[in-house]
Length: 431
Image 1 (cartoon, rainbow, N blue to C red):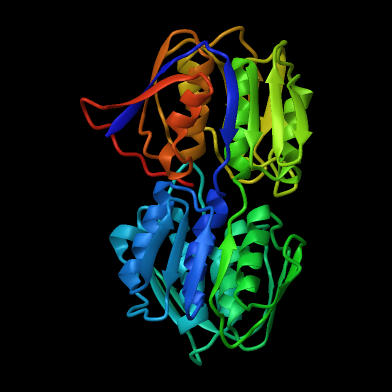
Image 2: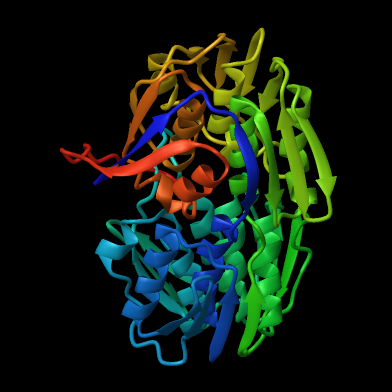
């Protein structure tokens, strides 16, 4: 077990290059199961969730070969089983994407209930199951999820999602790619990584239309073929570094992003007094004056992303005045608030809303990461705080941020990763 030691109070200056999108990679890698041949995936982030998924593919019988540190060649021509190891599936939430991919290709799947982050709310997969059943699968839930297409192949169907679900939208897309007939997903999620998954599948021969809108149509094909695809940049990683410079002050150039994907985050940071200039595939982010209060509500894309809520709340804890943060996606995502209180923040949680009274400074403390994005928030708080902070359970942070310690050091942060004398108590998390 390791922990981060952070010497706070130092503005950030320099450039940071954004890696491939975690939320896209954890769906596209399972989607490789649908391809009867070799696919090359580029711009893969070097994070533990990706490592775990590639190990699962190898356990299923796939051949996995890294060509560079960020590109991998996957051959799923000779899959030997549709049963996923319980030990591996428990490590990540995104293991549920294996159900849709295996159902789509082989007509059956046996996957352990997924693990991942637990930020205090419930993350059911009922909408995923609803889609699979509509498409002709029998699904049994327990410690494992057993799913089997009644006739050996999924059937096209109309699926209306009761809630806008990113996971269900992507999982049903995968199950439908090789189905017999046309599948329509209504009230579909519209996040950039959904479009990225559709583009990946289409590049391999799928026929998916409407990704990025609330109605997606998947015209089932008989087979997907070999091909190459590059994953989009990570919107949330970029937003996290932007939030870090907002909290600490300074100026950074965020490289290798799609500025349009950042609009929902950029707009709120600008309301708070952060200067942001768009330059092709970069954003110049500067904060030298005081931070101003604002109100934020997380919503499905193109609204403000729930995966940026802990980071932006941390920044607002240093803004002048009272801010209101409302979680509009999950029932509860404020477990980290107690850790910020230990550092001197003034936050009061009332159901889905956090009332944030800005303070003049945060003070270094020993805190822990409760989940992936809450862990990123702890890093931001520690960078902005006076004194030294220790952050434990950092394995959750490394699920979604490639080489975060080195990237922060390169822009002037004083942070190091050291061995813990005692293992931190395990926390179960959502990602």
